[in-house]
Length: 221
Image 1 (cartoon, helix red, strand yellow):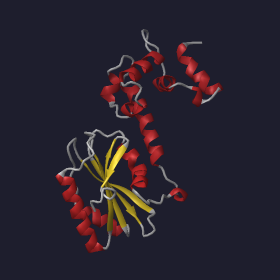
Image 2 (image 1 turned 180 degrees about the horizontal axis):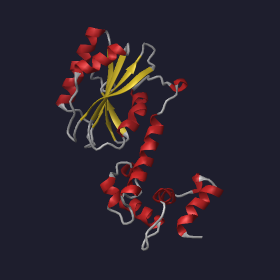
Image 3 (image 1 turned 30 degrees about the vertical axis):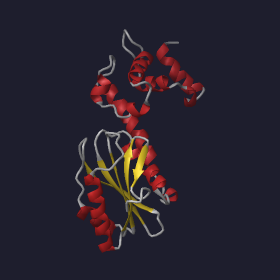
């Protein structure tokens, strides 16, 4: 059996759980080139990132195409597979609508939104009076150092969704959890605006990789 056929054979006869990470990646790559098998291409990709799948999730077309044997078509397949994984995490059925009781619940809900970003995004969680999720909404997308937040647009959405409570969140690609002066100012502005509409701003999370800082937990709200 060819080296490239072994992962497919294992998948078909034993199941995907018996495949190593490089074998799963090799199946997506499909076939190798004369000097490199799909397995060796997969190993080269994973070795370059120390087998860190979070870093793999941030790969772009140009990142994949730096490896021999990966052209536009194969890079597209790999990026599409990673995106499907992200969207599966984000999928909620009506029976699974979560109760957001604290910052940990909010972080788990939002983590997949931020996990592979190299730029800042600002998101809002809309909750009803029972603290059940109504909507998770992306407000803005920015650059590495910041993003613009429109207070009017946030409360326009909140009124439309009949939101009772808002939880704010944005990421820091730098990995620095401490809020900037701008972070503190926009939080204060949103809290004050919420009082006018009887909408509570319950928290503001700053997300970095697999952790976060909560304004509410720190006593800053």
